Structure formats: C-alpha cells, structure tokens
Length: 206
Ligand SMILES: C[S@@+](CC[C@H](N)C(=O)[O-])C[C@H]1O[C@@H](n2cnc3c(N)ncnc32)[C@H](O)[C@@H]1O
Image 1 (cartoon, rainbow, N blue to C red):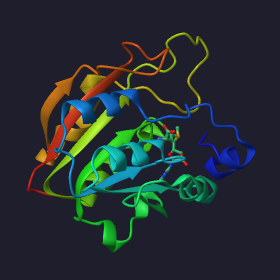
Image 2 (cartoon, rainbow, N blue to C red):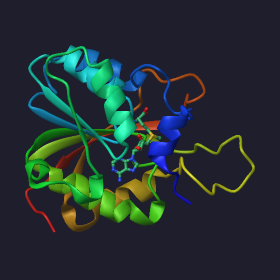
Image 3 (cartoon, rainbow, N blue to C red):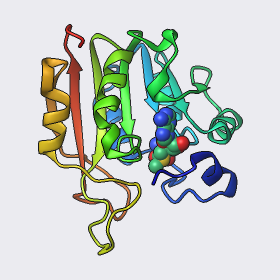
Image 4 (cartoon, rainbow, N blue to C red):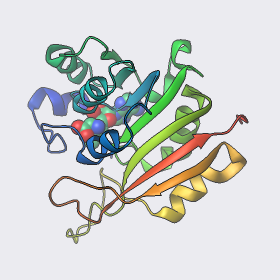
C-alpha cells in the first residue's frame, strides 16, 4: 500500500529525510564541476536538500524540485537559500507541458524506490518525457532497503536490481547507459546498498 505522503510530512514522520543532501550527489558534483547545467528536474524532492545542493554547486543551473506533497513543497520554499532553486507541487505521472522535453538533467534519489513497483514502467516513461533528447538522468538507486528486515516488503522503499534497471531503462532504446558509478560517499547504513547510474535519453521516444 502506498503512503499518504502529505500526511507523513504533516506528521513529521519522514525517516528518509536525513537533513542533508545525498552524499553520493555531493561527491558526484565535486568530481564533475560544470557538468550539470541547464534545467535539472528533481522528482520526489522531499524537503529540497538535493535541489539546494545542485543549486549551490552549479550556480548557472536551474534545478526544479517537484513533489506530490504540498507540505513538502511548502517546506522547500521555506528552506530556500539559493536564487536558482525552484519548487513546484506536481505528480510525476501527470507533468504539465512546461516539464515535457524541457529538462537537460534529471536527478533521481529515493523517488523510484518510493513508488509502487507496478508503476516503474510509467516512471521510466515520465522521466524520459521530461528530458530533452540526449538529456541525462543521474540516479542513485537503492538496491536492497530490506536487507536487515525479515518482514515482507509491503511498502516503500522498494528495492531493485541492476538487471531490473537494465530491463526498465534500456527496453525500447529510450535510454542508453553511460556510466555505472560506485558512489564515493553515502549515508551511514547505506554502504554497498546503492548504485549510481548515469543514463542518457536517446532521440527516440515511445
Ligand atoms: C522516500 S521520499 C524521498 C524524498 C527525498 N528524495 C529525500 O530523499 O528526502 C519519496 C518522495 O516522493 C514523493 N512522491 C511520491 N510519489 C510521487 C509522485 N507520483 N510524484 C511526485 N512526487 C512523489 C513523496 O511525496 C516523497 O517526498
């Protein structure tokens, strides 16, 4: 069953929020200065830590965080510090036209693992549709969130495998893999459980 995301934010019941940006993102931005430019979409941005990190590391970029939760977006706006960070309450699965084929980059972090696995093909279509042809998707994918948990994984975060990611993103030739990167840094407890991938949208869209 999917959570009522807005209720979780209203209650402050957000254990995924580590109070800081993804360490893997920060390390990648340090190692790739000047690369993430233009419009950068951050779906499921939560309270905006990653959006702020991108805006600060790449002042000429235009990162825009979207989230289905009104409360999360209000917190993002309250926490805003950079001129170039922007936020909008949106459902990734019904993006307005302004987000279609307009993004140069997309940063994925714990949105993919939060949605129902049945929706993953729709996730791939939505992120592909947001990117310009030859736009980049950089994502940190949570491979085995239930590693130490013997209970059945009834709710998010939902894990994945490299095989599933290949099958989802490479089917129909909409994306090609550019790099499989071992993240240089991560949150405590996530060592060896995350995979950083750089994909590129091909010209073809289904
Ligand atoms: C596990 S949280 C991660 C938030 C943030 N990336 C972080 O690491 O703090 C998943 C986020 O995805 C958002 N979300 C879930 N479904 C969504 C959808 N269809 N469109 C946009 N955001 C969505 C939730 O509201 C929530 O903020």
